[in-house]
Image 1 (cartoon, rainbow, N blue to C red):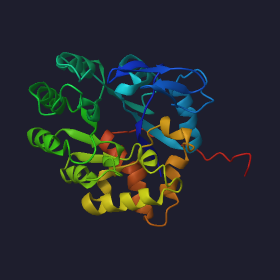
Image 2 (image 1 turned 30 degrees about the vertical axis):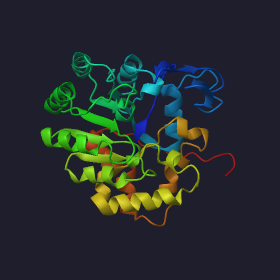
Image 3 (image 1 turned 60 degrees about the horizontal axis):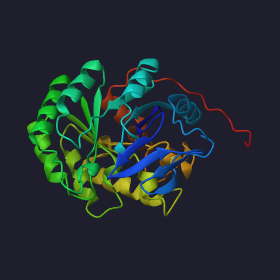
Image 4 (image 1 turned 180 degrees about the horizontal axis):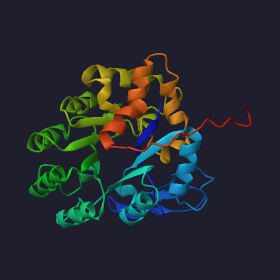
Length: 305
């Protein structure tokens, strides 16, 4: 099967502020993260650069043919670097552009990104619940952007707040823009109460759920993440396996596990059929994102084998 990662991140340097707290790249894979030092990426990435080339090496080793590069405010806006990545590796990466959605006036920037060649826009919507205000997904400016994206055939990649807090807003967006393709990340924040309400959004024809971060959310139980398998099964019962896509949330998740482990708990599971595994790990994403030229990657034996 051809494997596609529907949720990963790249950056050259973290240097930003979220909720008035700084996030800065340090050394040995660490970052100053909102008041504490955290192991943001594996310690062998000593310069803090989370580059496309290092990710491609991981992808080739794990036999992952392509990846969707999403964005998050905690990494800073990475549009310039990601457009360069897309130009250099068009068959391996689909990249999402991102605007400063926490402030009004982002619509011209979003239009510029789409005109420059971005095929998708990312909204970390859980970060829109600001201390002094809440940026609504149904605001006039958001709706104008969604209608523009729908007209241009762009994809919306979005992470929602826990539970059903923003589900009603998303229902309004979907009703207003029924042809807009939407990928909801972090597997609907599966370990939080009410996660099934986010999954049910995928009952709409153009909505999908991707599992970026699912190993983080089930980190307490750790590999082989049997709770995550049960959640995938439950989500499939709600909306169909054809609506679900695998995502790794690379590189943060591989501080605890290897990149291959972020999906092989699925491929080794006895609770999913081979057809379901093929859909979840690649075929659904290939169709949804339009990957046309997926590379063949041979299995390379480890020295320990």
